[in-house]
Structures are given as C-alpha cells and as structure tokens.
Amino acid sequence: MAQLSAEKIKRVEGLLTTLPRSLVERLCGVAEQADPPLGRLLTLCRDGVAARARERFFAPLSPVSGDPETDRPSRAFTPDALQGVLWEWLKDTLSPDIAEDVAARVSDTEASDTPGTLDDARISAAAVILEALDSAEADPKAAKKLRARLGVDDFEAVRRAAVILRSGKAIRRALDGLPAHIPDMTNALSTAIRDRYEAASEVDPDAAIWVLYFVMARMDQPWKLLRVFERIARRGDDLLVSQTDMAVIGDALLADAEHALKGFATAPQAEAEARAAAQALAGFAAITVGMTREIGIRKDGDWGKHLFEVRSRASDQMARIHDAARDAFKRATPEGGGLRTRINTPPSPGEPAFDRAAALGLFLILTKDDAGRAAVGNAHAEVITEIRERLESVSQDHLDGLRGSSEEEAETARERLREVAALMESIGERESAAVLLRRVAAARAA
Image 1 (cartoon, one colour):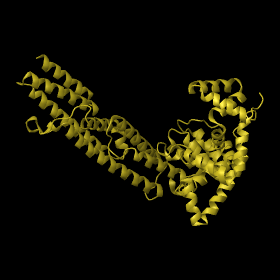
Image 2 (image 1 turned 60 degrees about the vertical axis):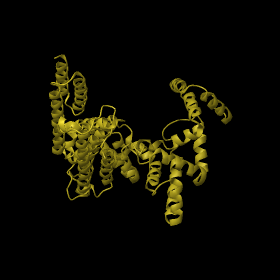
Image 3 (image 1 turned 180 degrees about the horizontal axis):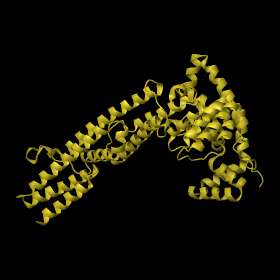
Image 4 (image 1 turned 90 degrees about the vertical axis):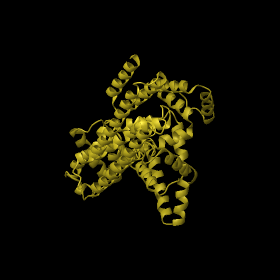
C-alpha cells in the first residue's frame, strides 16, 4: 500500500468523522488484523496525526499514567494531563524538530510499529527536558514561570516522565516475558523480578526502580512486591531496605494506603457512596495489613511510623462514621424512644434521612470484616449491635401498637414496619426483616 500524502490523510480523517464511532472502531480492528499498515493508517486518521504522535511518544509511560483522582498513586506518576502539557512544551518551545520527527514517523504507516521505534527521539527529548528543568531551578523566577506553564507545584513528576523516556529501552528489556497481569506473587516470579531488577540496575540505574514500579502496576496485590525485597536486600525486615532506593516502593504503597484513606473520609450518603467507601476501606486494610505480613515492619522505622499514623487516621475516620451511623438511625427511627414519646414524623424511603441511614447501614455491613483489619473491629461490632437493637425495639413498639388500633392507624403502622424492615436489611438483618414482614402479614390477616 502506497503511503498517503498529508492531504489525503486529512480527507480520510474527514470521511471517518462522518461514520458512527462504533463502525470506525470495527473498521480499524478488522484492518489491523488483515493488513497492519492499513490498520495503522486508519487508526492514524481516526485519532489524528498530532494525537497519535503524542500517544506513541509517551507509550513507555502508560503503566503509570493513571488519573490521580481515581487511580492509586503508584499507577499515576505521569498522568495523561501532564503528558499533554509536556508535548506542547516540547512541540512549541523546547524542540519542535523532535515533535515534527515523531509526527513524521507516526505518519509513515508502512514503517515498523515496534515499541522501540521512537526510543532515540525519547532520549533526545528527555535530555532537553532535564536540561530545561536544571536551568529553571537555578533561577527562582524562571522556575516559578515554568511551574505555572506546566501546571505543577514542583518538577518531580516532570523529571520522572523524562527519566522513564530516557530509560525506556532498559525498562522494556527487563519487563519482557513477565506476565502482563500478576494476580499473585510466586517464589519463582519473585526471583525472576529480582534478577531483572539487578540486570537493569547494571545497565541503567535509573531504569531499575521503574522496573519495580511497572511490575507493581501489574499486580492485584502490589504489597506482595515486598517479597522481592528480601531477595534484593538479603534481609527480612525494613532496616536495610528503607535505606536503599527500593524504599520508595514502600513509600509508594503507603501513598496508595493514604489514597484509599480518602475514600472513606466522610460518611456515605447514598448506596453508591457506601459501596465505594467500603471498597476504599478494603483497599486500605489490604495494603496496610499486607505490608506487615510480607516484611517485618519495625515500629521505630520510617515505614512503621507512617503505618501507625495512617492507621490512626483510619481509626478516627471510622469513629466519625460510627457516630454518623448512630445519629442517622436515630433520625430515621425517631420513635425509638417509644411510640408515646415520639415528636417527629419518621422519614420514608426516598427521603434523605432514611436513605442516609440505609447507606450507612450498608457500609457497616460491607466493612465488618475489614474494620477488624483496620483496628476498629470492636467499635464497629458495637455500633452494629446498637443499631440492630434499636430497630428491634422500634419494630416491637409498632407491632404492639397494632392491637386495638383503627384500620387506618393499623395500615399506617404496617407501612412503617415495612420501612423498618428495609432498614433491618440494610444493616444485614435479612432474616429478622423477613420475620418482621411475616408478622406484619399475620397481624393484617388477623
């Protein structure tokens, strides 16, 4: 297939914009299988030369280019937004020639599309980026101006991006053959990672630590990367490890734990929030407990002190959620002091007070196992018991109130009991809720 001119590429781009996106995706997929150069051409026209050039150029960064708002920090060192800013800086100021060369290579769909095709351009770009950073940091005014242009508080993430670009070949070689997804860390895999880390360190010291980061990004249980530390440091606790460059892996795990901590910083107000907060607590517990299980964390070491601090914050957050849950269920069942003394009309499903209580009940049940791992198990169990006892009392009061009541009053009580049963289900009392509903049905039949 002959290489298309820039004008013809623009025409194909225009044609693709008139087609449904799903059809364009299928066309690109089929073309890639049948004729790789044609597939690359259609993909180029689908995305545009500029976007495709940027994507290809920053491909080595993809394992750690997640969204800092949603992804764990160890997967978000060089976010996509930063790459966009760096590309514009490179293209407009630092080295337009490099950006033009990358765009020209990407446009040549007949050329090889192997991962290392742009390595020389990446190395050149890394050099000019690092040189520009060094120059700016020597001049406070220039540094301030550059930080504003790049939209960063400091240049750490920019330096990281440049180092990965410069070390991409060594990183890629070290990762070659390792599983793309690592659900668990076997002894054989741990040894293989150790060997690859050491080989990369000999070739390019900057690449070695990123080999570990990239491996961690592939893991479902990243704290198990600590098993490699024993083989690298030849020691089973963090005394020596924390004094090496591998200490940053432990710091990254602790940063992940702090990120998870933010996920349950406030009491959930709705079901979706409750499930997300419960997932965050599960992640926090898994990381912090996993770290202590995988390697001996000394209480007076940096990691030990940091772990104690984040666990203390988790305990404080959970205490506030426990208080919020007590308050929410009191508001959802204001008749809890006895039918004769109630002063408020109980909220119904769909009203904020009711839905908030149901969400907090769901959170408490979803986190009952992880609460113990987060060192708040006893308090968690106590608040669940307290709420369950309150609901039992409220339901019994309403059942007792059915006796001798008018049909209109009885129907009101039965509807309220169905609402109380829904709150029981939210706190994990499905069997009690089912029994209550049967008693309600029996009372109506009588």
